[in-house]
Amino acid sequence: MGPDAFLQLCEKLRATRQLRDTKHVTVEEQVARFLYIVAHNVKTRTVSFFYHRSGETVSRHFHAVLRAVILLEDEFLRQTSASIISPAILHSHRFYPYFKDCIRAIDGTHFRVKVPIADQPKFRGRKDWPTQNVLAACDFDIKFTYVLTGSEGTASDSKVLKNALSRDDNLKLPREKFYLGDAGFMLKHGLITPYRSVRYHLKEYAKYGPENEKELFNLRHASLRNVIERSFGILKKIFAIITSGTEPHYDFETMTEIVLACCILHNFLMGVDPDPHLIAQVDRELQENNPEEDEVVRHEQDEDYRRGAILRDEIAAQMWADYQLGI
Image (cartoon, rainbow, N blue to C red; front, side):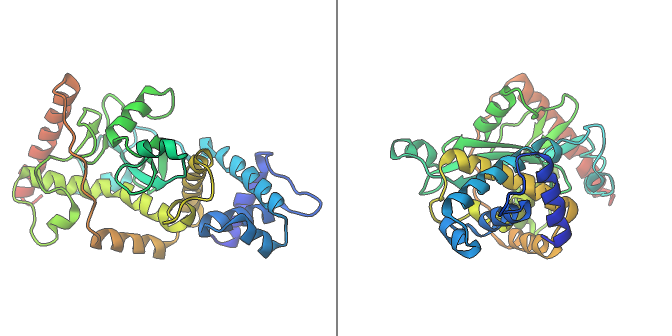
Protein backbone atom coordinates (compact mmCIF):
# COMPACT_ATOMS: atom_id res chain seq x y z
CA MET A 1 0.00 0.00 0.00
CA GLY A 2 1.47 3.32 -1.09
CA PRO A 3 1.42 6.50 1.05
CA ASP A 4 -1.49 8.09 -0.84
CA ALA A 5 -3.64 4.96 -0.51
CA PHE A 6 -2.76 4.69 3.18
CA LEU A 7 -3.83 8.29 3.85
CA GLN A 8 -7.07 7.74 1.90
CA LEU A 9 -7.80 4.68 4.02
CA CYS A 10 -7.11 6.56 7.24
CA GLU A 11 -9.51 9.32 6.24
CA LYS A 12 -12.25 6.82 5.42
CA LEU A 13 -11.74 5.05 8.74
CA ARG A 14 -11.67 8.34 10.63
CA ALA A 15 -15.00 9.23 9.00
CA THR A 16 -16.64 6.16 10.57
CA ARG A 17 -16.13 7.85 13.98
CA GLN A 18 -14.85 4.58 15.39
CA LEU A 19 -11.33 6.00 15.43
CA ARG A 20 -9.94 9.27 16.72
CA ASP A 21 -6.60 10.75 17.56
CA THR A 22 -5.69 10.49 21.22
CA LYS A 23 -3.14 12.45 23.21
CA HIS A 24 -0.43 9.90 22.44
CA VAL A 25 -1.64 7.91 19.38
CA THR A 26 -2.84 9.18 16.02
CA VAL A 27 -5.34 7.42 13.80
CA GLU A 28 -2.52 6.84 11.31
CA GLU A 29 -0.48 4.93 13.89
CA GLN A 30 -3.48 2.82 14.89
CA VAL A 31 -4.17 1.91 11.27
CA ALA A 32 -0.50 1.24 10.56
CA ARG A 33 -0.32 -1.20 13.48
CA PHE A 34 -3.49 -2.95 12.35
CA LEU A 35 -2.19 -3.35 8.79
CA TYR A 36 1.14 -4.62 10.08
CA ILE A 37 -0.63 -7.31 12.13
CA VAL A 38 -2.96 -8.51 9.36
CA ALA A 39 -0.26 -8.39 6.68
CA HIS A 40 2.42 -10.21 8.66
CA ASN A 41 0.42 -12.21 11.23
CA VAL A 42 2.47 -10.96 14.16
CA LYS A 43 1.45 -11.18 17.79
CA THR A 44 0.34 -8.25 19.90
CA ARG A 45 3.45 -8.38 22.06
CA THR A 46 5.68 -8.09 18.96
CA VAL A 47 3.87 -4.94 17.85
CA SER A 48 3.86 -3.68 21.43
CA PHE A 49 7.64 -3.92 21.54
CA PHE A 50 8.13 -2.38 18.10
CA TYR A 51 5.87 0.64 18.75
CA HIS A 52 6.69 0.99 22.46
CA ARG A 53 3.03 0.64 23.45
CA SER A 54 1.42 -1.57 26.03
CA GLY A 55 -0.15 -4.82 24.91
CA GLU A 56 -3.54 -3.59 26.11
CA THR A 57 -3.25 -0.45 23.99
CA VAL A 58 -2.25 -2.38 20.88
CA SER A 59 -5.11 -4.86 21.34
CA ARG A 60 -7.69 -2.14 21.98
CA HIS A 61 -6.67 -0.17 18.93
CA PHE A 62 -6.58 -3.32 16.77
CA HIS A 63 -10.20 -4.09 17.57
CA ALA A 64 -11.21 -0.46 17.09
CA VAL A 65 -9.70 -0.40 13.59
CA LEU A 66 -11.26 -3.79 12.84
CA ARG A 67 -14.72 -2.43 13.70
CA ALA A 68 -14.08 0.67 11.59
CA VAL A 69 -13.02 -1.37 8.55
CA ILE A 70 -16.15 -3.53 8.79
CA LEU A 71 -18.26 -0.35 8.78
CA LEU A 72 -16.96 0.22 5.24
CA GLU A 73 -18.66 -2.98 4.05
CA ASP A 74 -21.58 -1.20 2.36
CA GLU A 75 -19.18 1.03 0.42
CA PHE A 76 -16.71 -1.59 -0.74
CA LEU A 77 -18.64 -4.88 -0.79
CA ARG A 78 -21.41 -3.94 -3.15
CA GLN A 79 -22.85 -5.52 -6.27
CA THR A 80 -22.83 -3.75 -9.60
CA SER A 81 -25.98 -3.52 -11.67
CA ALA A 82 -27.00 -6.86 -13.16
CA SER A 83 -28.07 -5.07 -16.35
CA ILE A 84 -24.52 -4.02 -17.22
CA ILE A 85 -22.41 -6.50 -19.19
CA SER A 86 -18.89 -6.68 -17.81
CA PRO A 87 -16.24 -5.32 -20.22
CA ALA A 88 -14.28 -8.54 -19.61
CA ILE A 89 -17.13 -10.39 -21.31
CA LEU A 90 -18.34 -7.76 -23.77
CA HIS A 91 -14.93 -7.23 -25.37
CA SER A 92 -13.95 -10.91 -25.65
CA HIS A 93 -15.03 -13.09 -28.57
CA ARG A 94 -14.48 -16.13 -26.34
CA PHE A 95 -17.14 -15.01 -23.86
CA TYR A 96 -19.53 -12.78 -25.79
CA PRO A 97 -22.36 -13.32 -26.53
CA TYR A 98 -22.38 -16.70 -24.80
CA PHE A 99 -21.89 -15.38 -21.27
CA LYS A 100 -23.61 -12.02 -21.78
CA ASP A 101 -26.02 -12.83 -18.92
CA CYS A 102 -23.24 -13.89 -16.54
CA ILE A 103 -22.80 -11.30 -13.78
CA ARG A 104 -20.32 -12.79 -11.29
CA ALA A 105 -18.28 -15.82 -10.23
CA ILE A 106 -18.74 -17.55 -6.89
CA ASP A 107 -16.73 -20.04 -4.84
CA GLY A 108 -15.77 -21.08 -1.34
CA THR A 109 -12.36 -21.26 0.30
CA HIS A 110 -11.09 -22.41 3.69
CA PHE A 111 -9.27 -20.44 6.37
CA ARG A 112 -7.87 -21.90 9.57
CA VAL A 113 -9.70 -21.14 12.83
CA LYS A 114 -9.29 -21.77 16.54
CA VAL A 115 -12.29 -23.44 18.16
CA PRO A 116 -12.89 -25.44 21.36
CA ILE A 117 -11.88 -29.11 21.21
CA ALA A 118 -15.53 -30.18 21.40
CA ASP A 119 -16.35 -28.22 18.23
CA GLN A 120 -13.33 -29.24 16.19
CA PRO A 121 -14.87 -32.30 14.41
CA LYS A 122 -17.48 -30.18 12.61
CA PHE A 123 -14.87 -27.63 11.56
CA ARG A 124 -12.30 -30.17 10.37
CA GLY A 125 -13.20 -30.95 6.75
CA ARG A 126 -10.61 -31.18 3.96
CA LYS A 127 -7.75 -30.10 6.20
CA ASP A 128 -6.12 -31.71 9.21
CA TRP A 129 -7.08 -28.68 11.30
CA PRO A 130 -10.31 -26.73 11.92
CA THR A 131 -11.32 -24.28 9.18
CA GLN A 132 -14.16 -21.98 8.29
CA ASN A 133 -15.61 -22.23 4.80
CA VAL A 134 -15.87 -18.70 3.41
CA LEU A 135 -18.25 -18.17 0.49
CA ALA A 136 -17.51 -15.22 -1.77
CA ALA A 137 -18.69 -13.79 -5.08
CA CYS A 138 -16.75 -11.36 -7.23
CA ASP A 139 -17.09 -9.21 -10.33
CA PHE A 140 -14.74 -9.63 -13.25
CA ASP A 141 -12.58 -6.74 -12.05
CA ILE A 142 -11.21 -8.95 -9.22
CA LYS A 143 -13.30 -7.27 -6.51
CA PHE A 144 -15.49 -9.12 -4.05
CA THR A 145 -19.20 -8.31 -4.10
CA TYR A 146 -20.35 -10.70 -1.40
CA VAL A 147 -18.64 -12.50 1.48
CA LEU A 148 -20.16 -14.91 4.02
CA THR A 149 -17.79 -15.99 6.78
CA GLY A 150 -18.13 -18.41 9.66
CA SER A 151 -19.47 -21.59 8.05
CA GLU A 152 -18.15 -24.87 9.46
CA GLY A 153 -15.24 -26.44 7.62
CA THR A 154 -17.22 -29.63 6.97
CA ALA A 155 -20.00 -27.72 5.18
CA SER A 156 -19.98 -28.15 1.40
CA ASP A 157 -19.99 -25.12 -0.88
CA SER A 158 -23.53 -25.99 -1.97
CA LYS A 159 -24.73 -26.10 1.63
CA VAL A 160 -23.10 -22.75 2.41
CA LEU A 161 -24.65 -21.23 -0.72
CA LYS A 162 -28.08 -22.55 0.24
CA ASN A 163 -27.66 -20.94 3.65
CA ALA A 164 -26.56 -17.66 2.05
CA LEU A 165 -29.58 -17.57 -0.27
CA SER A 166 -31.93 -18.17 2.66
CA ARG A 167 -30.57 -15.15 4.52
CA ASP A 168 -31.96 -11.66 4.14
CA ASP A 169 -28.78 -10.15 2.76
CA ASN A 170 -27.20 -9.13 -0.53
CA LEU A 171 -26.74 -12.48 -2.32
CA LYS A 172 -29.50 -13.13 -4.84
CA LEU A 173 -29.63 -15.22 -8.00
CA PRO A 174 -31.37 -12.97 -10.57
CA ARG A 175 -34.05 -14.65 -12.64
CA GLU A 176 -32.61 -13.82 -16.06
CA LYS A 177 -28.92 -13.69 -15.08
CA PHE A 178 -26.49 -16.23 -13.68
CA TYR A 179 -23.33 -16.75 -11.66
CA LEU A 180 -20.49 -19.11 -12.58
CA GLY A 181 -19.58 -21.80 -10.06
CA ASP A 182 -17.35 -24.86 -10.07
CA ALA A 183 -18.45 -28.47 -9.82
CA GLY A 184 -18.76 -28.16 -6.04
CA PHE A 185 -22.08 -26.36 -6.53
CA MET A 186 -25.49 -27.57 -7.65
CA LEU A 187 -26.41 -26.63 -11.20
CA LYS A 188 -29.25 -24.10 -11.24
CA HIS A 189 -30.73 -21.67 -13.73
CA GLY A 190 -29.01 -18.85 -11.84
CA LEU A 191 -25.76 -20.75 -11.20
CA ILE A 192 -24.07 -22.43 -14.14
CA THR A 193 -21.50 -25.10 -13.36
CA PRO A 194 -19.21 -27.08 -15.72
CA TYR A 195 -20.11 -30.43 -17.22
CA ARG A 196 -19.12 -33.28 -14.93
CA SER A 197 -16.88 -36.11 -16.19
CA VAL A 198 -15.48 -33.67 -18.77
CA ARG A 199 -12.22 -31.75 -18.53
CA TYR A 200 -12.91 -28.47 -16.80
CA HIS A 201 -9.67 -27.23 -15.19
CA LEU A 202 -7.56 -24.85 -17.26
CA LYS A 203 -4.40 -26.90 -16.80
CA GLU A 204 -6.07 -29.90 -18.44
CA TYR A 205 -6.21 -27.97 -21.72
CA ALA A 206 -2.55 -26.89 -21.68
CA LYS A 207 -1.50 -29.40 -24.37
CA TYR A 208 -4.72 -30.38 -26.11
CA GLY A 209 -7.57 -28.09 -27.09
CA PRO A 210 -11.29 -28.85 -26.77
CA GLU A 211 -12.61 -31.73 -28.85
CA ASN A 212 -16.36 -31.21 -28.49
CA GLU A 213 -18.94 -28.68 -27.33
CA LYS A 214 -18.82 -29.75 -23.69
CA GLU A 215 -15.06 -29.43 -23.51
CA LEU A 216 -15.15 -26.03 -25.21
CA PHE A 217 -17.83 -24.85 -22.79
CA ASN A 218 -15.82 -26.09 -19.80
CA LEU A 219 -12.64 -24.43 -21.07
CA ARG A 220 -14.23 -21.02 -21.47
CA HIS A 221 -16.27 -21.43 -18.32
CA ALA A 222 -13.06 -22.13 -16.37
CA SER A 223 -11.27 -19.21 -18.03
CA LEU A 224 -14.00 -16.77 -17.02
CA ARG A 225 -14.66 -18.26 -13.58
CA ASN A 226 -10.92 -18.12 -12.85
CA VAL A 227 -11.44 -14.55 -11.60
CA ILE A 228 -12.70 -15.81 -8.22
CA GLU A 229 -9.59 -17.96 -7.79
CA ARG A 230 -7.45 -14.94 -8.68
CA SER A 231 -9.32 -12.85 -6.12
CA PHE A 232 -8.77 -15.43 -3.39
CA GLY A 233 -5.13 -15.81 -4.44
CA ILE A 234 -4.44 -12.07 -4.16
CA LEU A 235 -6.28 -11.88 -0.84
CA LYS A 236 -4.16 -14.68 0.60
CA LYS A 237 -0.94 -13.13 -0.68
CA ILE A 238 -1.63 -9.80 0.98
CA PHE A 239 -2.97 -10.91 4.36
CA ALA A 240 -0.82 -13.51 6.11
CA ILE A 241 -3.10 -13.46 9.16
CA ILE A 242 -5.71 -15.54 7.32
CA THR A 243 -3.31 -17.97 5.64
CA SER A 244 -0.82 -18.82 8.36
CA GLY A 245 -0.01 -22.50 8.76
CA THR A 246 -0.25 -22.15 12.53
CA GLU A 247 -3.28 -21.82 14.76
CA PRO A 248 -4.65 -18.25 14.71
CA HIS A 249 -3.90 -15.89 17.57
CA TYR A 250 -7.56 -14.80 17.71
CA ASP A 251 -10.77 -16.64 18.60
CA PHE A 252 -13.27 -17.87 16.02
CA GLU A 253 -15.59 -14.85 16.12
CA THR A 254 -12.71 -12.42 15.70
CA MET A 255 -11.23 -14.41 12.81
CA THR A 256 -14.55 -14.29 10.95
CA GLU A 257 -14.48 -10.50 11.31
CA ILE A 258 -10.83 -10.36 10.25
CA VAL A 259 -11.55 -12.31 7.04
CA LEU A 260 -14.40 -9.92 6.22
CA ALA A 261 -12.17 -6.92 6.94
CA CYS A 262 -9.42 -8.32 4.71
CA CYS A 263 -11.90 -8.69 1.83
CA ILE A 264 -12.98 -5.06 2.29
CA LEU A 265 -9.35 -3.91 2.32
CA HIS A 266 -8.67 -6.06 -0.76
CA ASN A 267 -11.41 -4.20 -2.65
CA PHE A 268 -10.08 -0.85 -1.46
CA LEU A 269 -6.58 -1.71 -2.69
CA MET A 270 -7.78 -3.06 -6.03
CA GLY A 271 -9.55 0.24 -6.56
CA VAL A 272 -6.83 2.71 -5.59
CA ASP A 273 -3.50 0.88 -5.45
CA PRO A 274 -3.46 -2.51 -7.22
CA ASP A 275 -0.12 -4.30 -7.34
CA PRO A 276 0.43 -5.61 -10.91
CA HIS A 277 3.45 -7.67 -9.87
CA LEU A 278 1.49 -9.47 -7.16
CA ILE A 279 -1.42 -10.08 -9.53
CA ALA A 280 0.98 -11.50 -12.13
CA GLN A 281 2.55 -13.74 -9.49
CA VAL A 282 -0.86 -15.12 -8.51
CA ASP A 283 -1.71 -15.75 -12.17
CA ARG A 284 1.52 -17.70 -12.68
CA GLU A 285 0.90 -19.82 -9.58
CA LEU A 286 -2.67 -20.60 -10.61
CA GLN A 287 -1.41 -21.71 -14.01
CA GLU A 288 1.31 -23.93 -12.55
CA ASN A 289 -0.41 -25.45 -9.53
CA ASN A 290 -2.64 -28.48 -9.67
CA PRO A 291 -6.21 -27.55 -8.68
CA GLU A 292 -7.88 -29.21 -5.72
CA GLU A 293 -10.39 -31.86 -6.58
CA ASP A 294 -13.94 -30.61 -6.27
CA GLU A 295 -16.49 -32.52 -4.26
CA VAL A 296 -18.88 -34.67 -6.26
CA VAL A 297 -22.27 -33.03 -6.05
CA ARG A 298 -25.41 -35.05 -6.45
CA HIS A 299 -27.80 -33.04 -8.60
CA GLU A 300 -31.45 -33.17 -7.69
CA GLN A 301 -33.54 -33.42 -10.82
CA ASP A 302 -35.86 -30.52 -10.00
CA GLU A 303 -37.17 -27.80 -12.30
CA ASP A 304 -34.39 -25.37 -11.39
CA TYR A 305 -31.75 -27.95 -12.31
CA ARG A 306 -33.45 -28.77 -15.62
CA ARG A 307 -33.63 -25.07 -16.56
CA GLY A 308 -29.94 -24.72 -15.75
CA ALA A 309 -29.05 -27.78 -17.82
CA ILE A 310 -31.04 -26.46 -20.82
CA LEU A 311 -29.36 -23.06 -20.58
CA ARG A 312 -25.91 -24.65 -20.37
CA ASP A 313 -26.58 -26.89 -23.36
CA GLU A 314 -27.82 -23.93 -25.42
CA ILE A 315 -24.70 -21.91 -24.65
CA ALA A 316 -22.41 -24.87 -25.38
CA ALA A 317 -24.13 -25.62 -28.71
CA GLN A 318 -23.93 -22.01 -29.92
CA MET A 319 -20.32 -21.73 -28.80
CA TRP A 320 -19.29 -24.94 -30.57
CA ALA A 321 -21.05 -24.00 -33.79
CA ASP A 322 -19.21 -20.66 -33.91
CA TYR A 323 -15.94 -22.35 -32.94
CA GLN A 324 -16.15 -24.75 -35.87
CA LEU A 325 -16.77 -21.80 -38.18
CA GLY A 326 -13.69 -20.10 -36.83
CA ILE A 327 -15.62 -17.34 -35.10
